[in-house]
Amino acid sequence: MEKTIGFSTGAVYQFADSLSEKTIKLFDQMGCTAIEINWHKNTDILNKELNIFLSDCSFEKITMHLPSNIKYSDNFATFNLLLHAFYNFPCIYYFLFHPDLIEDWRILRKVKLQGVQLTIENMDNRKKSFRTLDSLNTAFLNHPNFGLVFDVNHWIVNGNSIESIQPTIQTLTQNNIRICGIHLSGTDFHQPLFKSNGGKDIIKSLSIVPNHIPIIIESILKNEEELKKEWDFINKHLT
Image 1 (cartoon, rainbow, N blue to C red):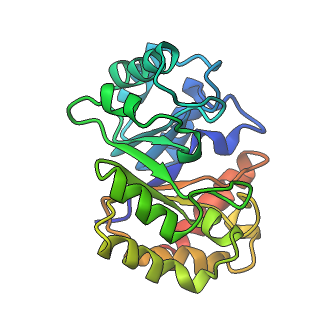
Image 2 (image 1 turned 180 degrees about the vertical axis):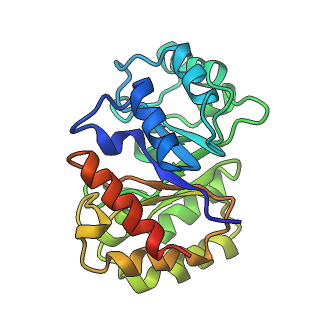
């Protein structure tokens, strides 16, 4: 069995409509077995039709990054936004939050549905929290129903080495933290791996990731040529 891998729709925002049927079908035609719907802002429209586009494709895992321009509090607006995502997109494998935006974790318990996997990711060096192993361990101790999407780029920009990626994933697993997904991009802020120093080694460090766990490529790409070059580069070195 091969790795489950594909792009975040946000990877193509510089040259394409990230949430269009055309973009989703492009990823499918490239051979992606995973896709992450990047609902970047709560002002973006997520129509039910998007779910139809997704069901027409052959992705094995479909995930969703929830908006990162709001605070998740125990209020009606947050409740409605989450219900919209959970009910209209039953195909989603996990829903991902930026944990520093969660002001009241109770709202997430209120809207939790059977079979809905909620996840958080480790944050980058622009954030004040959820950047270190200690802060992640504390978060999951207090909220054990959550899973983790381990962001390789965020880990590196916080000053950690490429060599530390594998042992960090192993340590997280040993601490009973469920790793539900991987976010993959290069050494600078979401730099394409084919442009990154050590890009090949970053990719190879994910050899220990079980095949069923989706690896989501978040590299920011300038055009379709770069998209295909990144896809070929990653698949060449991923085992």
